[in-house]
Length: 154
Image (cartoon, rainbow, N blue to C red; front, side, top):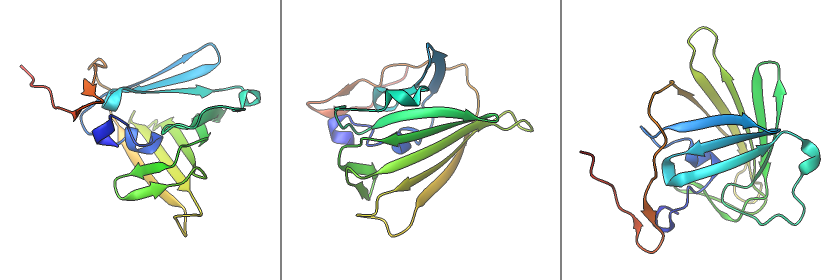
């Protein structure tokens, strides 16, 4: 996927070290933008907006809801591809992400699960924590004809 400027999946997009992510709520939607591969997701908070005839993509189609102080995101509608390096997925992939701010540390916590019975005999899962940053989201500058070329930092 990296050679084709694809973030591979919603789970992989969270895992790029050192690159910022922004999360914003607007008009009944959550927008998550990862600098990694310029990945941008829309999470629909109205579950009646389920995908119908929606094109399958690497990032899928996401519907979210709030439970207590956590955002729960359920994603389906994936294209067959790679959940992350070495982990393939079919169009049957389903993921759940749970995001919340730990009140003791102020860190953003992500817990995720992925199921795809065609490839995985058990639920894949993981957990990551993130710190706040003053870094702004830049452009990843990936060329889909040539793949990603790192940019020199001055």
